[in-house]
Image (cartoon, rainbow, N blue to C red; front, side, top):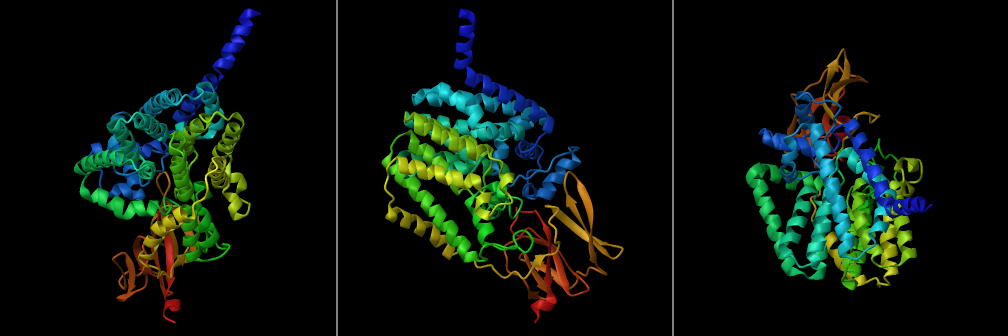
Length: 528
């Protein structure tokens, strides 16, 4: 009886560890089975650098995938664009190994970092470690599973942010800056810590962080070249910040930007019936949303000087991000640890339940619902931040809201007004996300697309001839007989004139850079 009782005590005492290690072990096995996935983006970026192939083609998904395909790899569909160029440098040690070995080693290494940092964070801030360990495999089941399956880097980002905030509270300026600057140059999102430091008026830490960020940038530019970074900062990053990663409309992003896009921006194929077709209303709604979230964040940080103010800043950063993911919700564990530190058991489990739902709800189950209800994670995240703000009894400050409204609104007024675009999607069914060429066979238009290799798809469009003499692309705009027809910021290639006075070309409008589809301009409409 005593022995059985001892086993029960041990199981209860270490149940969090047992469940966590079971989840991790099962996910590691599954990760090896499904292949390279997201990890392969960073891996091949580093590999290209080692082999002297890290050039502007890294940002073109067709070139990126074809180069990898030509090396003999299969069952991969990759896109480096969400990563800054510096990510490739940090992954060089793993690129020295075969892909699947590298992914396994990366997963195991970052899992160890993650678990150690969770323990250190709980220990430093006097948080009940057993409660947090029990939450990890339950509250964060899908985020952790997907993090390991896809070989994402959020365990590493968690470690860098967590170790950074411990060092920050110890006033170790150099160590804090090292941790946070590396996180910023692997995933841009952690730059939200700058807002946290500004609100704290911690000018010394801002100076140190700025110095280390400058050093990493200088080091990366010296290795990778100015052109790579210019392309990323001028063309890639702005498109990423508009949620243009690879598809124009995706509810899986669960971001405010994407929700307002569904509500107010019409697309003849992908979103034919928005609530109101109004680009100004889209911009105003997004502006008001970001200003509100940042104002709430600011008031919490200014009124709370402890660990929770840092955690709330990270949560607000996730909330205003143009694209979200299940694995990025791992960072909410920092928030959950901070909330447990408040020692209010009832409200803690309410928060834990909300975080569980927003991390584990299957978004696909909401696809048939009205637009707003298709974004359950976004709604829950908003509710979580508002609940934290309300529970802290912090008053809403209209002046702070107005300042953010001004800071975020002024740049919109000076945005280039590139709005002339008479084109429409040629294909009524959006089957393939990466078209890279088209042509005519037996009087029928076909196109070639990429998905684990080049594929050909016939259309039902009859075409006699494709003429290119009268069509040109200058400064990324379509010209017909020297007359400019477009004035839009999307990339355009391969323009041709059909016999029925229609111009077709490849465009990545509203999508990630290089994710082309076929658009068409009807010259008859343009000349009447």
